[in-house]
Length: 146
Length: 146
DNA sequence: TTAAAAAAGCAACATAGTTGCAAATGAAAA
DNA sequence: TTTTCATTTGCAACTATGTTGCTTTTTTAA
Image 1 (tube, rainbow over the protein chains, first blue to last red):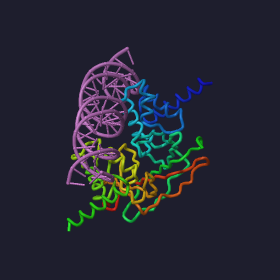
Image 2: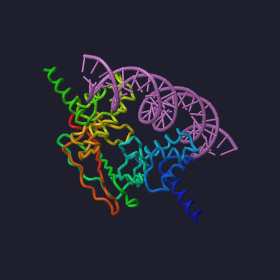
Image 3: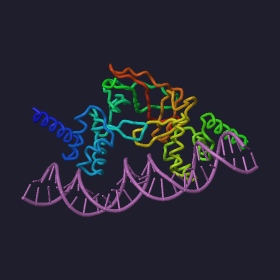
Image 4: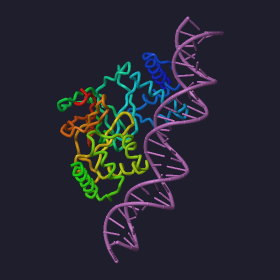
């Protein structure tokens, strides 16, 4: 049973990499694993800590950059200088992230979630400004912490 | 005339510091000057470059932290690990930032503006989540660049 | 199996942020 | 004004974070 599950996840990872024309390497598999085996977003530091024991720091940086370029993961803006990354739902191929969900940061467990069902609202801007992309980050208490 | 204006701004700065129970020092005056003499937000790097010629890096870090704690300036979240700071409109005293405006980043001039007249929208969250604060950052072209 | 291309690792470097402590400055009282 | 005390600054040293060039290793595809 766990064998089966792990085969599935391996296949899923391999497929994801192949679909994006990326060669299948240990570090890429490991880092995708980290994202797939948990709900929330990961801060760069987390990823480096968990993956960095096995891989060079530089490799982690380059792998994350590659994933962002390919649209496999996206960054979440924060006010505290710690980039957070999360898996894209799907089809953000070619570096175009068309996702329009909002992000939620729980200040109790400090997790960051993509609320895929909550769409970013229309924002009415003053005359002269034109919007291209709207980013919404809500902070509060998540459903696991209340 | 410029003399008069500079007296005014000096008074304004002194008043701002006094109201927040901060002693009036050269670095604090200089950094507040930077904020007052321009529209947009300032990235930490900008501040360090412009103020740091006269002051130690550490002083800049500490001064900005003090201003955030007192509610004189606020941070603006970004996805690129470069904290931006902007003056609070007013009355964000005691570290409580009650402002609810949105932020706009122009990707042509790369300036960040506080759109004080645009209020953050209500966001309807999934069951179990409770919001405390909503942060909206819009990117696009500003009125000076179009 | 092998050759070319891609990625990883390493080293060295650059930038960003923090901490403790001594010297300088500011505020307020004498 | 001068003195005193608390606050702030600057310095040095350090940690953390991010980048670049180059060599070695791994992956892919012939």
